[in-house]
Length: 460
Image 1 (cartoon, rainbow, N blue to C red):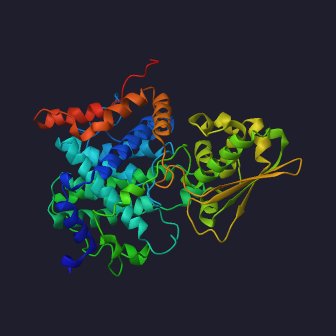
Image 2 (cartoon, rainbow, N blue to C red; image 1 turned 90 degrees about the vertical axis):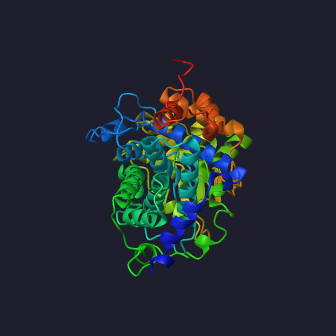
C-alpha cells in the first residue's frame, strides 16, 4: 500500500530532483520569490505585535537565526522557521500561488534547516523549489471550492516537511512519514481573515514550524499514515477533494512555480485587481474626489467573502487595513497606491477617508467564479458621467508580471520599512546559489546569515 501512496510518490520524485535539472527560468523565478519573501519578512519584523508574539517563545539552542533580527541568540530550526514565517506573513505582502502562500511557509523551513545543517545555498534553493512546487500543485488541483480551510496551512505544512527533510537527506520513506506527520498537525481556516484576527498571520508560521518538527520526528523514527492524502480519512476525503492524478502530470516539467504572483501592494490578494482598476481610472481621468458620487466594485463571491466586510473601526486595525476592500478603494481614490503608511491606525481614522468610504459600494457578480480577477470598478460623477475600468488579471501574476522597476520599488519600500537598503539586498540575491562559500558547515551557515541580514540603509 505504501508503494502507491501519494506522499511516497512525491517524496521519491523530490529526492531524485537535482539542481542541474532545474530550468533556468525556474531558478530565476526561485531567486525572485526568495528575494520577495526576504524583503517582505524584513518589513514584517518591524511590527511591534510580531515582536511581542515572538517574545513568548522560550529560548532554544541551535545554529539558526531570525532574519534581519540581531538581538536574538541562535535558536533551533523549529523556532527559526516559526519566527521567519511569521515575519513574512505579517505585512500581507507575500507572494501567492493559486490560493496558497507557499513561499512564506517553505522558504523559512528550508532556510532554517539549511542553516542548521550548514547546507549550501544551491541545496537550499533546490529544496525550496521542490517544496513550493508540490504545495502549489496540491492547491491548484483541488477540485472543489474550499469549505473554508486555509490552503497555506493545509498544504504548506507538507511543503515545509518536504523542504526540511530533503536537506536532512531523509530516505523517501522517511520523507513520506515527515509529510504525513505534518499533515497530522494540519489545520487553519479562513475565519481569521473574515474577522481580521491575528490568527490569520500566525497560521503560516504554525505550518512552517510543524513541518520542520515533523521532519525531525521522522528522522528519529516516527511513522505516519502512508495514505495521509488519499486515504479514507485523509486530507482529500476530510478537507478538500482533489485530482491527484494531475498532481504528477508533467511534474518537474510544467512548473506551477512559474504561476506565482508577486503583490504590488501590501494587502490581500483579493483586493489587488480592484486597486489596479481604481488607480487606472484615477490616472487616466484625474478626477477630483469631490466630484465623485459613487464608487462601485463588481467582485466575485470569493473576493467578497474574503475582503467584502463593512468597514468598522473595531478589532485589530492593521488586519482591518489589510483585509477590507472598501478601505482599499477609498485609499486608492484619495491617496493613490496603497503603502505601508496606509496600514497604520491613524490612516484608517482619517476624516477624509471616512468621507470617501461612504461613497464606496461592492456588488457581487455571481457569474464571476474566479478568485482574484477579473474585477470591474465604476465611478459615477456628479455630472452623470460613469467612468469604468476592467482589470482582467491579477497584478503581479504571470499574465501581468511586475516590471523590474515595480519590483525595485517594492524592494525599496520594504527596505525603508525595515531600515535597510532593500535595493542592495535585491542585488545581493541575484546570484544567491552561486555565492562563494568556503568548505565547512560553519562557513556555509555564516554565508546564509549574511544573505538574511540585509544591508545598512543609506539613510542610517
